[in-house]
Image 1 (cartoon, helix red, strand yellow):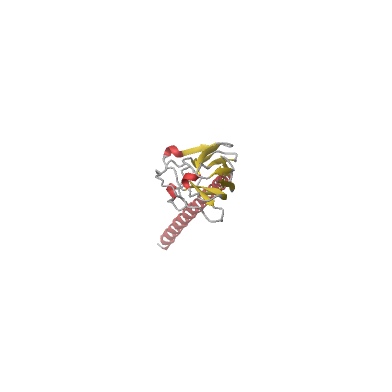
Image 2: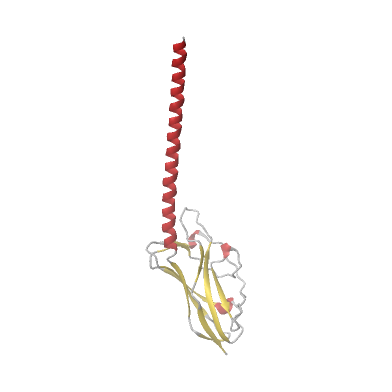
Length: 195
């Protein structure tokens, strides 16, 4: 009888040992899987972030000298200088700097001859981004748009102005496509307004 009790306790001890070993194996397997997924995700995101750094915004004045009350055109280029395609919001709508994120793709910061910021005067009605606005820029490809900043901003004085643009995107697609998000400032340009 004592032998049977010892045998039963040994069997239950062996069963609990096997259960613990199996639980430990599952825990180690889960930890290994989490580690592999985390490392893979990190490298994918690092690579993606490196490519995003290759996106640049450039602006150029159509003319460096402009007559007062005449159009003042600025050309904006969003370029992919990387080795891989970059998905962007190509809507490129202009709005004032404090507009809601979803309605602000391009803003200009214009400074008057006294070094003061020039106010945004346009009244805009921008639709939210749509699926058709999402574009893939291949390496070396760019989006180019031309804007008349004289109708957007209060250019009311004669003299030297400076301007730069900011490209902003917070729009995400609903198709699991990594879209560039963030703010990207341009170079600064100078232009003259003459009588």
